[in-house]
Length: 129
Figure 1 (cartoon, rainbow, N blue to C red):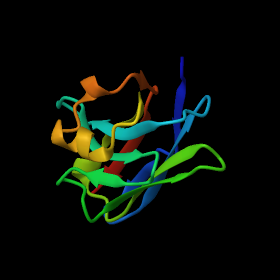
Figure 2 (figure 1 turned 180 degrees about the vertical axis):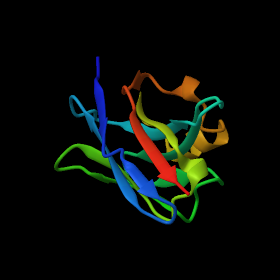
Figure 3 (figure 1 turned 30 degrees about the vertical axis):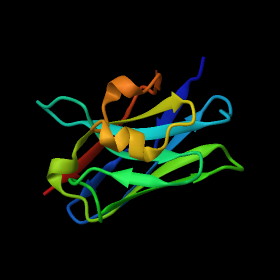
Figure 4 (figure 1 turned 90 degrees about the vertical axis):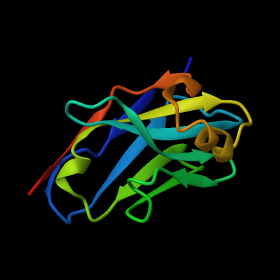
């Protein structure tokens, strides 16, 4: 079992920046970690993923504005969000998929949440006009 804890959610103005953190409860040998968000009135969507080797993939809605990274020494993953827009508001979740699949595998499956085994409780991001 793996528990994931997100942090870093906050309220910012349009154009602002935030960095979210995801901390798994233990180290996993091979994995993909994804960031998902659920905007008001919408279903949860995958927006970024990183694999054990540090490769990343992004959904079109955030590519160029969001960067996902990880610190292996700290066993933490991050989502750096810049140029935030009101439509970025929502609850952000990190999720983990155990195994050696790469970000290409996840991206080819449309960042489907069904591909992930463990989930955090979410952190709230609010972007005001």
